Image 1 (cartoon, rainbow, N blue to C red):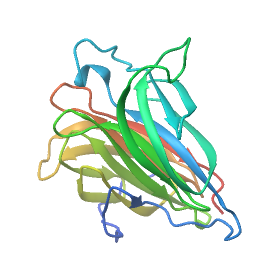
Image 2: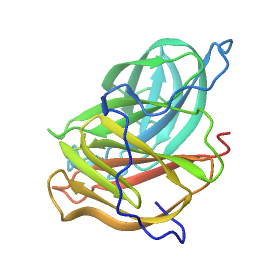
Image 3: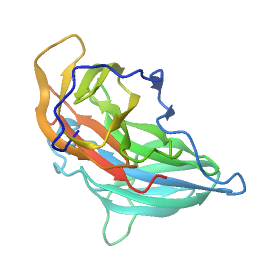
Image 4: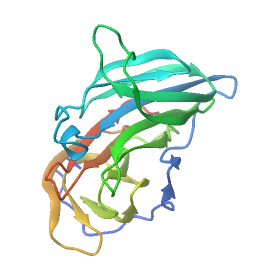
Length: 239
């Protein structure tokens, strides 16, 4: 992922890949905290859904009828938003700047906000090119000085991927799942491959991961249409 560190040809011991509500990070939040924290990741290119849609696919998101995210476009990561823990009715509609959340719902899904945890709610394209959603929970347990936590989430239309980022080789990450590892802070070259292939779908790209950071790489879009790309987000000072 990035720095003046020479990529190492080793594989780190990975925790098991989890499907959908992926525990990417474990919680370090105080048990008394009844609030949950949600980041919203827009990983759905409009033209993968319909040639009539704006490529940025601006949408609004409501939770239990309250319009929370407005004019949210492809590639944006917003948050964290704080909510009382619980299950919310999340509705996605095409954006209406004059009347936010006023258009017809195009996608509806229950969204769980976990007590004391941070989660990433991802709007994505499924392998069948339909709008879908994934929820990945974030592990903010302390990270030792000089190290960083890295995770790769497959929220793309590719059914299974392999990610190589410097010392971390994350194999066979299925659609809607994620894998993670701890790596020394630094700058690394990284690529995304279709599982079983040695030809990169994305990359190589140079990425820097900072000491005591939790850095996520969300693989989104479609390899068929050429929209496949990586959205990066880092949470710093995880000590």
